[in-house]
Image 1 (cartoon, rainbow, N blue to C red):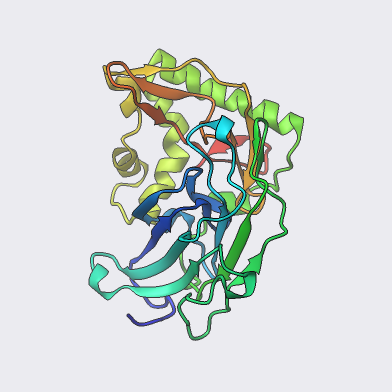
Image 2 (spheres, rainbow, N blue to C red; image 1 turned 90 degrees about the vertical axis):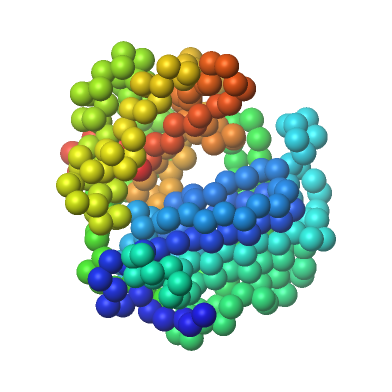
Length: 304
């Protein structure tokens, strides 16, 4: 599989492929969390990440920590499992031609090894920097839990062409982790919650339109925001007779600022936002995930 810059693609399609074994992870692209798992195990997955890629150089980051037991009381294990392994690879291909995908960056990490050896199996990529490793960075902290021990691996990508779309959040304000921002963003969540509770479809479409418009751009959908709404199934949970809206959640939540200070969300340690949907007959929780930016007028805009 060849390494190549993501240049001259008519409709570039970006995919992040992950294999995770025996370790807790927070895997980020441009400081946007793509996969978060506290409990380890073994999993292989693939994400379409067009909406998280930016023009120019992108940054892939793998944050790892010895995994937690199945209950919070068991806590975090003291050391990495000897088989702990993460492989995260960012690919690009022409839309519809996944057989010809090329590597933009990769991190292949064994966090149980000495730090200088932990990323030695990462692919060599001509023109791309090596993996940068750190085991002394600020741990992930939530109101009810802290991930005390971690290894962080970061690697930049080969460049994406300069005419790739620029997202609205890139031109938003830098968001500070303050009580004022927590309170005002929580109010924005409450507005969305009330709209779901009232099953106000027109208002749902209105609130989701900035997000829908960018998804349409990211995935080359014809029809603008309307096509984006169809792609996202806007309001699907509210209209599903088997779904029940939970109570509004504020306990043990925090303001999480990400995307290098350009986006924010409110979450708890399980990555639940202030409200979720519950299946009425099955023991299933459907998480509602929203990302906001703050425009130059100081308004919170749902964008992811």
